[in-house]
Image 1 (cartoon, helix red, strand yellow):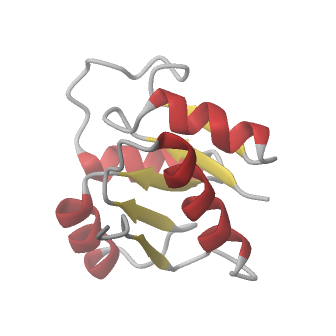
Image 2 (cartoon, rainbow, N blue to C red):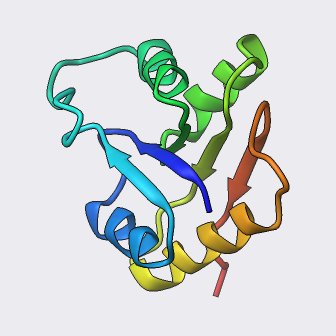
Length: 113
């Protein structure tokens, strides 16, 4: 199971579902970093300092960050899915396929149908 840091726009319900699947999820809100306009680089730095991978819907910016700062504990970029249970399941499955998340960019894409 993974230690994750959910950024500000990541759905709270999905964070909660991931916890029921055994993942250790800390949200930006729980860390006291909500509504502060913290740059993405600092979100990633916080995750690294707390030994966590970042999980986000902010795909473009975090894909760029992965390319420019590849020394991280994992970045999971997701497309939003109104079916929160399906979204959490797909994320958990993607995480569980990896031996380690360190330095990896994991893409979790919503099914097209």
